[in-house]
Picture 1 (tube, one colour):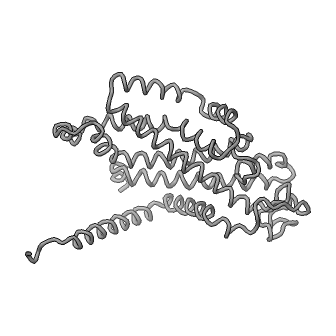
Picture 2 (spheres, helix red, strand yellow):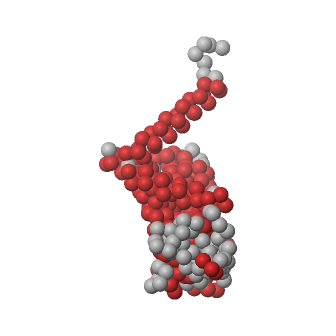
Amino acid sequence: MADNAITPADSLLDVKQSFSDRLAYLGRFLWRDKGGVLGMILFLAVVGAAVFAPVIAPYDPLAQNLRDNKMPPAWQEEGNWEHPFGTDNLGRDSFSRIIYGARVSLTVGFFGVLIAGSLGLVIGAIAGYAGGRVDAAIMSVINLILSLPYLLFVVFIAAILGRSLLNVILIFGITDAPVFARVTRGEVLRMRESGYVESAISAGARWPRIIFGHIMPNLIGPLITLATFEMSAMIFYEAGLGFLGLSVPPTTPSWGNMLAAGRKYLTSSPWIAAFPGLAIMFTSLGMNLLGDWLRDVLDPRLRRSRK
């Protein structure tokens, strides 16, 4: 064997070096974008709270103590640092309930986007690549769904199916799929005329291989960016359903349920509804800032303009 021959170990080392260089580049690009840094911090804080809720939360989120009901936050005159965010009308610790509520919001957002993205990716790729009557038929259904008032459409379905975490995830996953399908179709229409797709067709590749092997890998960037914004929107919509009493059961701590419980006490005990509202706001802010940074990273045109 020649001395300069490339061994499998050398190839693996090159892959690791390339991956580390890519991570270092992304880290430097993130550090230059202060909004992206803030978004990453807020997002990781919410994820950490959801994952380590049993460790972080000082109380059981369902434990009631009517003697301490409607206790104000710790920094107010009658507050107590044993309950830093105060308590609700049943004496439950608001801080613990907010931490556990992050689990519901992130679960709905993540799995809802996962279902919507998977369905939309397949449907949009088939419509864009097939064209003709297939494209027209699929897009007619998608445009019909998108023409409906989204929130009213979701409320109508949730009222029929009943209160359940699984139902909420399926509702958002199915009703949000047309958004991903439309974006995917537009990208596929553009890529269908590209040189590498024409080369694959000339080489005799069949359409499933072209779609799943050549086109879909190039859709990851736009769809990841879209997923961050849609996940933020799903957190808002889940809170809205919870506020209307159509999300998870009342025994499950969620930010929407907390808003619904606190609306009766906005004048006398505003903190009951204020803190879950702030949790929703900061979570959505973090995801939107993170989505803006991902869009800049994954779109070379925006990256060059930022430079």
